[in-house]
Length: 313
Image 1: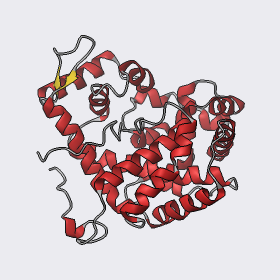
Image 2: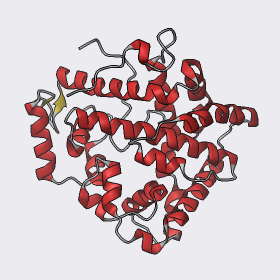
Image 3: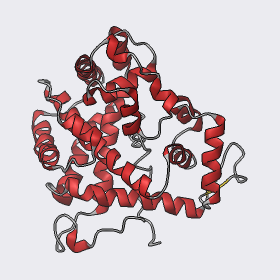
């Protein structure tokens, strides 16, 4: 069973003023891009090394799942969705090198140093305005089924005001990712399948996806075959891999739109205008870190490079 779009009269804001889904997509891309530099910044690798972990994979997993507390790797796997078990199993022992609260503190320290090294310029007035918009979103969110978002919302905000804004952004970013997993599962798109589907768009290099998520050839080929059988991929069209068919492109955008419909409730406290304004206020963070402006994928590859709304299908 697939989720039906919410009737306009029941979407946040009521029938007279529903959330504009293009604004939902815009602010989702903005919070994703403003968050993602943290994984690429050298300060993050330095912070992990100071805690005794020099392997980028386990360090990424520890930083991102630290808000969950001392959980076994299987819990992180469940929350991260498109990572293979072998990729996440590699984080075994990270809580022995340092407890999650130290990883969380190190993450905040690295983010603050990176933002200041990159000369992120957000005036005090704009910082206060951004917090006035994002804070009611985080406070008013429904966290049922939103595991990573709820965990991050439970983390005490740091004293550094710029890093505190980044943490609130992180909550919103993980909320969309959590919602996206529900939509993927409802459409029968499994962990490896969604990654294959994303790489077929050309927005995520296959080599990078496979190196970080660590699906082996058998698993990758099986996922590709399932998508070909659904008519979403053409295995013979590309020289280096399968490419999206028109049906696959429409299906992927439909999944993104359904995710946007879930997220309309998240942004309802500030409405369409507030969502667009917050997206604009976050631009200095994104522009300070070239390479994140396209809104790279979350754990499930959410937020495509285009914001074009699909034709009804």
